[in-house]
Image 1 (spheres, one colour):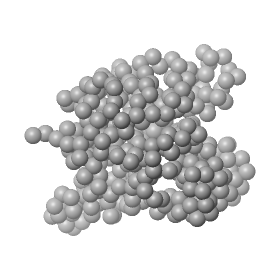
Image 2: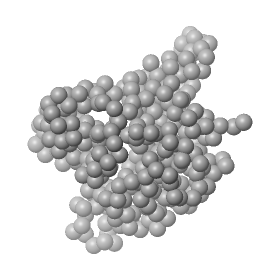
Image 3: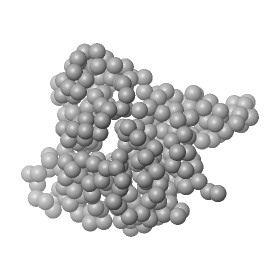
Image 4: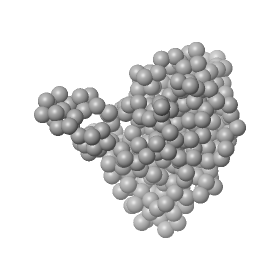
Length: 314
């Protein structure tokens, strides 16, 4: 994978492959319908597991910031989950935001605004957000600590931040795919060729079952796992990728003066959320906190870390 590359290369990547692509692609397929009918057929519950995780810890935020919102799929899902909240989605890629606005407008969501902002540079937005969501962003940045500190400065007094990061232990398949494509494509920046080869090599998730698998290989656009070239590019050809483990996650939080509230999703903060065996629980709880978390992650081997954090309390 190499070291994280310059911002210009990442900017160019998202200009060519705005991500995620599902909502915008769905809207394009419905263009033949009258505008008033399109919202009735559009799916708007993307990121359902993420939304459930957030709602388990956050009740009624008045102001929400989606930092690095891309094409706005999560922003739209947040607007549906918190119907009284006002949302701001920011991203450094104008093309992605154009797609986000087109989907939000089609759905009649007036409580969402989208604005071009670069997390690697000083932000020009006000603070006071009750909830900040930053999913799939920091692990693609050269200086994630700087970006996170900027977001923390814009939390309200009791605000919380939800972060989603790549997990090192559970991403062996993706790492193998990245290395394979780097071996086969001499120009590391040739994303289009990597996307094409990923399909030819069968790296893209396909339906199980012989008939559906064969159909999927020929007509990838028909099966539910397919999100288009943007998904493949983000998975196997992104120019800047970092992977985290518990210790580096905690270091990242510490760099922004944040404290962990809870791990959600695959990784958990408490062993009793995963095991009931008394001997396992006894041995886990005898460990210091960081070693206990390390033991949990070694057992779970998560491919991502979802967590809620807040400003460190004195």
